[in-house]
Image (cartoon, rainbow, N blue to C red; front, side, top):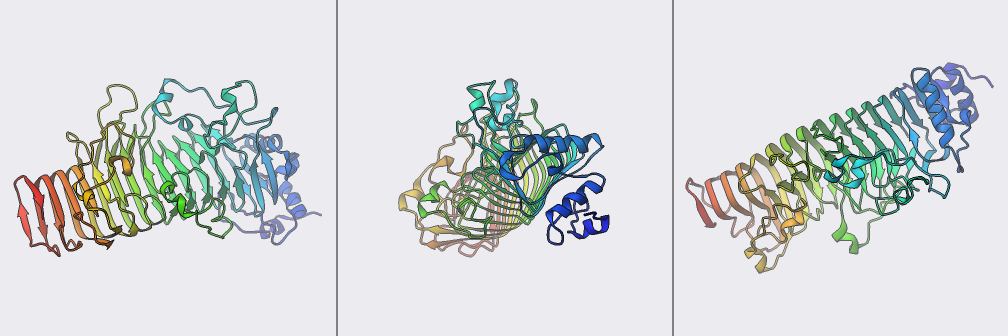
Length: 529
């Protein structure tokens, strides 16, 4: 049956990269297949031999379709409803993958004779970041040096056959045999990339690894995964919006700045807005709408959060995070331990419930995993406003620099931090280690002697209209400050009792605090107030 352009477009409207959504609500799959063949630049993978039955391996057909539209100067590869089992799909410039409602791109399990592309060799800098950050080709979808590409929904990418960086990389044992994949989507040195309206289930080690990608937009993507959600590494001009990420086994949205390109490259001009991150739902239950919580015994292992760092060779600059929700997850983290800068950051309108570690974690350390001779990094000019955190665990928020490299210029305003409280008396007397070389994590210092904030090696710190509250009485002060220069507190509210514990603090000033008289202390002071 012939289908004209108007009939084809009426099959479903979509305001995306192609201007079309090939739906099935108003036309049969056969009609759409015919229509796809009649519209320039849009091809149906079934025209190239894809079966879509979840059994036959459709890798060859999918890559043929991509090559076809790429040779024509660009176009859209359309997946109608069906289950397309595949190994590595190789993206080309000016190509869009469009997964219709009911279409699933299924990462197949490797066999003795078939598998994924082998990971590329890596230079000496492979020792400077985690293994997974050094490889892209061993993925379900990968692209390198390509531009103007898109992966669009509303269909599903299911990484069922992917590994999780869990020792199943069989190509390491047999470099000539079939490869194992461990990422749903991996992109390197690309530009003008759009991911929109897709769903990703069990994305492997990374649902998305984007390294050196400029002009990247991720919008309305749902990720329900068994390790990291989005790893945005050494990227510029990035927009992440309207996304849901459930990642109980690892982190949710992870801007990084590794040495994986063979040189440091800053991640900058990044906006994360209107997103929901969590780490306490069974994988798949967010996608299917049942929202099944992990068992209570899982609580110590909860992940799922927004975290900048761990990989921190290049740095982070010009960052905005706004209108996001954290639920049953770890908190918001900014980390530089390998020589990176973190500067010019604004955070606003954040709600947090059930944070298992520090609601806020700012860490400047000196692990220095990178080439010799790189100076220690810096962290400065971070503004955090309108954060409401409730029912966080015992660990307070942390701002921790180094004795000779303090964190600078931090402003926290109009926030409420509520913790469970009830710490034993001994916790108020602990003296946390410096842990200068340790992996950055909020738990790295052990127990901390504060209910709200532990601040060490910092200068020019301002808290304005901040409340710290506890559900159960707690012997610790709301704030513990060590080696802090110029700390201003305005309009503070804290549990009745000790508000501050100070050690080596200069330029301390408070005004309008609820449980303490206004005071200014210009000299060096230690003591409890």
